Length: 104
Image (cartoon, rainbow, N blue to C red):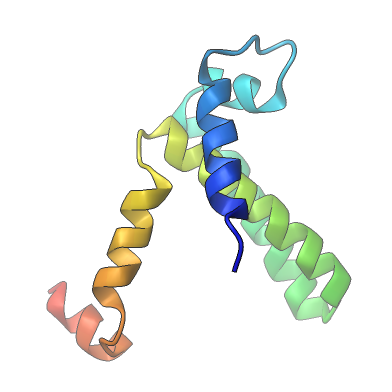
């Protein structure tokens, strides 16, 4: 596993103060969490479509877009990748059924 997602998250955070005319990330962040969430939703749907079509290369491309836009949305909501990873670490070794039941 590489640090790609962590590097990407750091780049996204660094673009928070950048000029929206010079950076797509800055443009998304300037529009707020709602726009970031909308873009993530669009990319997630596109990934689903590629998966259903069975287009592996399309799915890879759309999954990369979805991950990028997820990180932008997290940044727009002041949630860090480290926080999400800590939650995944907390859930590791717990069955999905058990974990879901604990939320009730």
